[in-house]
Length: 195
Image (tube, rainbow, N blue to C red; front, side):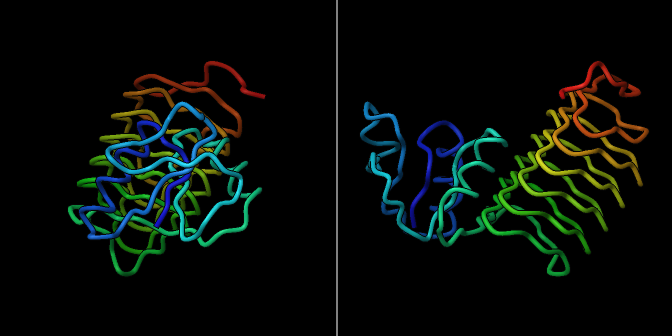
């Protein structure tokens, strides 16, 4: 098992994989100054070895890399997380400590479901989405590709958030948010377009 990216996000994924008893053979990173991370060797090569997880927090970079390389991508779920057997996680998705994914959810590829995030029933989460720590995503919510939901946010049932949005930390999302929006606040409102 290998990781692609040797920063802070990789450290958390290393913790998840070791908790699962998965052997980590090394990491890849284009920074030649990084030789090891948490005792694991870091290689600087364009020859990527599978199976692998893209261990980079930036949603756009994860998408660019996933579309550029041919590899077997692995999904990682921390043993303390609860994921319904009736939900589906796409390849390369990572579910952090104490996160919950309830029944009948569709989670896309290369997503981050971060520490203690909760996704309730029947949600549809697009590819490359990051649900930050302590978010509460209520039932029947749809979140588009590449969107980043900031830490501690809550999304009420049935809301749709478009693709490539940023939802500010601590936001309460009570209405639909269109694609490419920066939105924030209690009674979340659109601050500007990210187009």
